[in-house]
View 1 (cartoon, rainbow, N blue to C red):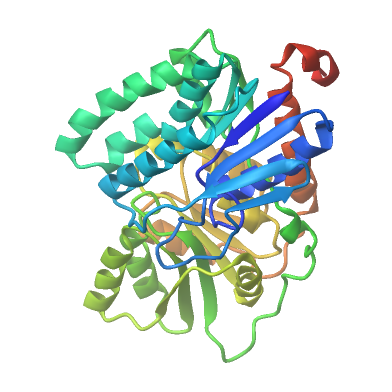
View 2 (cartoon, one colour; view 1 turned 60 degrees about the vertical axis):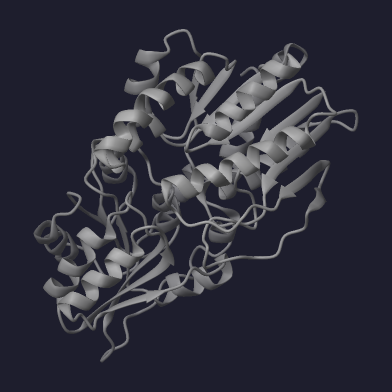
Length: 399
């Protein structure tokens, strides 16, 4: 059996897609035999323009052949991302033109990698599995300027319909997506498999706790993307003002709205907010240890009421209190699954201050959450689900 896995992001890149696909390849390797072929086509690290890490053009990971495409430097804007994807798609089609695949697996948050996978599956007469991490049509309607959204939404709506209807199986990372996808595509088979907690965090459970050092500011840490979806420029300046002296907010990452955030911090003359460039995972673990509270925020968009941020799983693996500005399904999930998490409505500064004051600043036992959402176990379920669409494998992977 010949399998193609498409993902724009793959280790060592920094993104939810990368962290999901690396363990999936390991799980597939465990289930495939020497007669099987697993090809991964991805890009060299491109998540942040301010962060890059060397990665081989081609390497073997177990039985998988991984080929990485070099893409032009880009920013986070819509047009830049479109140009980057066109370059990616052109190279993917070239690299895969000499192989007829039996199964195509494509993971996507912005839809087009899923559409590319659907095209290759149709070209090769292959089975198609899609791993969908966001509702792109929903999101662009909220984040794009109105005139651009007026043109883009109908176009991507058609692309989505064409793509999803060709899939033998679609896995979704959030049960909040069910009302959207199951209503629109009643004939499609869906499975819900969340993100999870990576081995780097599970191996260090019990090492994140620290007592606050007297005389030092209480540190709130956010590490991740700084785009319109996070809306940090709409919450952090007001939160920093409200907390005042004795508190420090450290923001690590990059993205399209970082300049707006920097401008707002400067305009208010805030000295208790520090912005840093993205870091690798080893350095990130050290930052988590040094923090007193972990911070998460999504913008106040209707589309985000359906999502389940992967950051919740990462934060939940620590003993740290969590301050989260999220709504909808993510808030319901966090409330029921993660102890010592202060919830507030997105962009609500007063609510954030109240939620912060409600937190227990001591260490929190989250062993039940960690056991339930071990990434390795979820990746195994994901691999089994994908392989089950192949007739010769379904009897082996059916529960």
